[in-house]
Length: 106
Length: 124
Image (tube, rainbow over all chains, first blue to last red; front, side):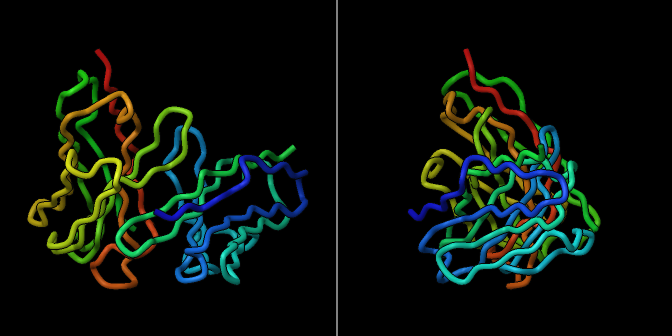
């Protein structure tokens, strides 16, 4: 089965830009999705179809997927953005999640 | 917008069985595929299973194949996860999640609505 690789942790200062990568060969053939997950809460979809934001998701969240590596970018990071972030993709008949990245806003 | 509410979690002995339920509201349930996703303590998200809107297509993660069955009752707006031969490795919060639905009722899209989760603990 395919794997998606994310850095375990990323740190950023408030107001700066955070970038979280997700690497995997499958991303060259399928869409990447991103979720934000805070402790004690349910995951929230923040990016679908590589670059699209669902309604209600702030514009500071953006995504890209040029092939094999997808990136979630948070511009002007706020303290409320501190959370775990997961990438996800479909591998024909199964779902693959990345291992997750803990974003710390120092 | 839609809401999902899981139930049925609890403490079960190794080798035991459990049935989780997920009640849906606020959207046309039969038009959307549904999935179950779990998170073990201190671990990341792991997809478990998916079912199409009609119920005619089901998918399973290799780690649960043969032990877990997903089903749905569109007349009751509910999806279920039947779990057998449970082990400590199945201990997790189990979430049900709605498919975004851009590709019809087949499971193939993002998960745009999640329930609050139900805890399953497998321990003697």
